Amino acid sequence: MQLQRKHTDWMWAYLFIAPTVLGLYIFFIYPMVHSVFISFTKWNHLSSPQFIGLENYQRLFADPTIFLEFKNTMFFVLVSVPLTVGISLFLANALNKKHLLGKGTFRTIFFLPYVILPVITAQIFMIVFNSRYGLINGLFKLMNLPQIAWFSNALLTRFVIVLVTLWASIGYFTVILLAGLQNISTQYYEACDIDGGSWWVKFIHITFPLVTPQLFFCLVLSIINSFKMFDYIFVFGKSNVIVRENIRTMAFGIYERGFTYLEMGYASAEAIIFSVIVLTITILQNVGQKHWVHYS
Amino acid sequence: MKNRYFKKGISVSFFFLFLFSLIALVPFFWIVVSSFKTYRETVQIPVVFFPESFTYFENYKELFGRLNFLSYYKNNIINTIGITFPQLFLSSLAAYAFARIKFPFKNVIFVSLLLALMIPIQMILMPRYKLILDLGLFDSYLGIIIPSIPSVTTTFYMRQQIMSLPRSLDESAYLDGAGHFRIFYSILLPLCHSALLATGIMCLVFSWNDFLWPLVVINSTEKYTLSIAVANLQGQHLTKDNLLLTAAVVVSLPMVVVFIISQRYFIEGIALSGIKE
Image (tube, rainbow over all chains, first blue to last red; front, side, top):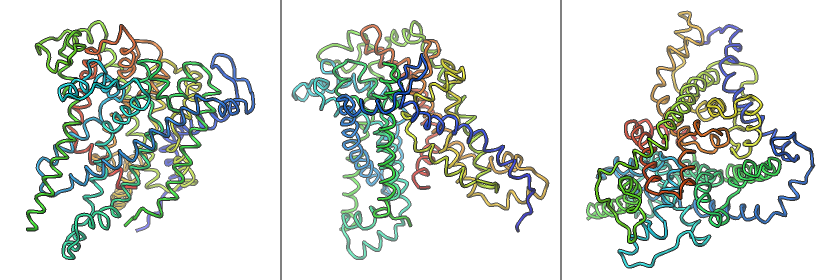
């Protein structure tokens, strides 16, 4: 039955969407446009912004610190994303058994780290990996392994941060992937059993293609999360300057330039470049998904 | 034969699951144990795994006493509640309009919201900070709360939920003379309760854990959120690690409890967010 609605309907609709839509325009979309403007100015947020054209961008491309931040950002994305998604898929696959003992408990345990404040997670790991009295070196000593000064070199420090991100986020992605796996009809596997397919054949020809929508979702999300990672870098960097210089990422650099050094214009220029990178990757992923993601 | 093979597959899985559970749990074990250690026990070499007594409450006393953590708790609760409930209500309201009412520019507006979804927070940090200054909201709870209320994800998710409800529900109510707000509030919203719980809990965790935005907005110590308070603890008096680990217990506990009580909705909500794509 098609109802004859009143023509005042659209007024109700505008009233209903107004708070959310205006809120998003005011606090997300307008600032986005405004940040392009700020990036062409010199502004320390006390005086009024002063237009300087492309100067910030010229400075940015010649700045070795920004290049380091870019490299570190890419390092975290390229190392943590495959590990996060890979391990999550592995765990989800292991959990996706009908008669597995303690399945719900495992899922709860894996997810638990996700609800911890990221600031806290970072601090726990810093203490656990402390080179003198940390738990890890303590355990290493028990097993007669060498003591490692985790924060003495850049690569090891970054490795610890990758571990932090893995620990905190794997449960979340496992839950998403597990839901996808549970959606796959058992008929496919039964048919494959009749044909005598091994677990590997099943994984490549049934599980993987049918879980690609969730896999894609996880990939997009974990890439964005890696780019935006701020809390861990902030906390680790606070411990000492050398560590901070070793691990600084663009997300951190933008904050530091804007709010510690009060170079709002310069920070905005970096933010624009950062966003262009993130958006380009997001778009590329969406274009690329047609080739490997199967929607039923 | 087949059966035995199958069982072996399960026990290998079990082994790995067990191993990863240990890794997930060890930091929790460590913070709880360490919260009862004296400073000397914390930094002792070789590492002591257990404190001498589990009745050493000085760390907790110091956190809630001198370090004033109870008031940071209060701040966090104000912000989290101030964000979560308005967000759920207003997003659902908008979701209802997008799902059920025809109005001009609907699709244009809806798609333009996608833009807000894709913006990394770093891009809008500086202008939004300026906006908050101009609105006179700097260093206030409202400065944290108001920009965090409008949410694209919650709106999209609730729209999905409302669209999945049969239209005959609103039509019969409409014939009985109910207006849009009534249809939304008394008929459809109650039917979305598990979706509301799922998104509500996600929103709760996000706002409870948020760090960057409160760090930008808040200036005075008494308005610190737990995240900022904990991050600042690190800088003070030579970083007493036993205190930091106690803070970890104190700050994590509420979210762990919320999660364990409500994990069904929690996990449902997250699982759905992956499937709806």
